[in-house]
Image (cartoon, rainbow, N blue to C red; front, side):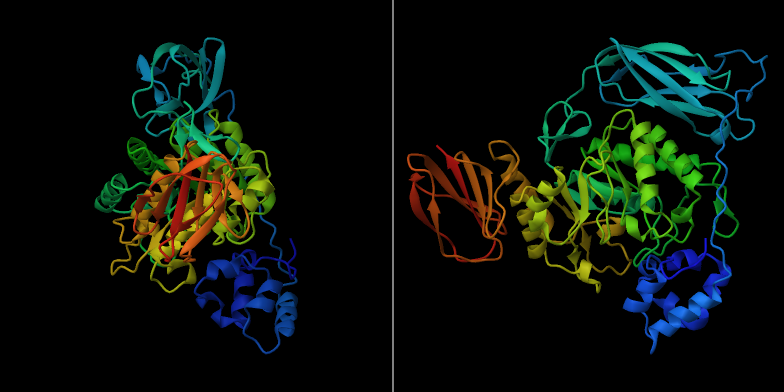
Length: 574
């Protein structure tokens, strides 16, 4: 691949000669505070928007001339297909030791543990799966190698009754093992996985309404044990029921510590063995997902992200595919898992849009339970109409555009990143608690769901948005109050009744919620359908108070208001 003005700087930077040429003419480039964003820019974009140079055009032509002999074509690893002769014909079929429970609760993880061969490289040499059948329903799932001769097949039963299973494998030892187990009723608090409901909202599989109140702790699961436990304790006392978290460690401001473990064997210095996985890493990840599940929190798993110094964001395309299949085999049976293909996908300069389309297909095809799946943007929103995308995960500060996006994509709108309450220097990390709560309310009144994050400066660089720990901000308890207000509405969700100028949501003629945002009227004139009576409440969204007004209201009427910001009025039909 020849270098042109449209070539991403990251692709050139990964080539030793290309990097030396860029540094020769732009010494300051690698000192850019957000070099990851520079890497995602093309040469032409950098010259036009970021380059400090008296003659950007000359700089660009000089770079292109000195790099005209460089070929950036990459040699991809050949995909390895497990062969049928992994074991000799003398090996008895189905001779592996099998351990499994005789019962499992509905929507929990039922696991087959098999002890089998470990010669060669079982991560790529062995293909393992199983078919589970109950009352005419059959579900096929992938298994995976877990190290030390141990293989696992995980299954999430979705129906009560007796399930029969049978393994399939190119390993004679692992092939043809059979068994059965009883699926028992779901216990209190177990409502199954979350699904899209009523086009723009969510519910658990048993029909119980789910209102996503999300937060972001990107790499809380890559911290020391004590800090991770503190994060879980904080979550247990909060209203958050969804958390965005990365599989891979992160390298960014306030994220400069090495993680305790890595997903592949090897090291930065010696390189990684991408043909194998590190079971210890995934055991820890699973433990934390299970911890979240016990708290009733959905784990929004970010599969790729650009903030990387280890090479996990630029893996070979075949390694990417193998990783995604391994992840779905290990984690799909956890009912509280959501898939996020990427955080800020377009900053992953090595992956064009066709890669994300392929990744979406791989995850969808290898997750037999149809967990929710999304892809998150930096600036340029991915095509959210793609059929494998279940809901729109957006980075946008304009939460009041939720109704517009609902109409555009006809899917739930989750603004996972609308900026962070905090006090650090970057513009995205220093909004006030009042501003965060306002954005939540505006999103809700326009039919969407905003996401929380917190970035208060800490002497140990323990910022909630990244490492977790404890919450310092003023918005979480007020976000909880909003959740309670929505839950008290007749349908436990909000749909917009006004999409411009004013914030009004509810069910026409039955229930209305008016939000005045940062405005501060001392009265409001209502014009309702004659003959219909309502009771009225004045809600102070910041002070978290509800004042029920005396009497009933109908037709055209006026309600006096406190004359301060962040007030709402609720009208409920009598």
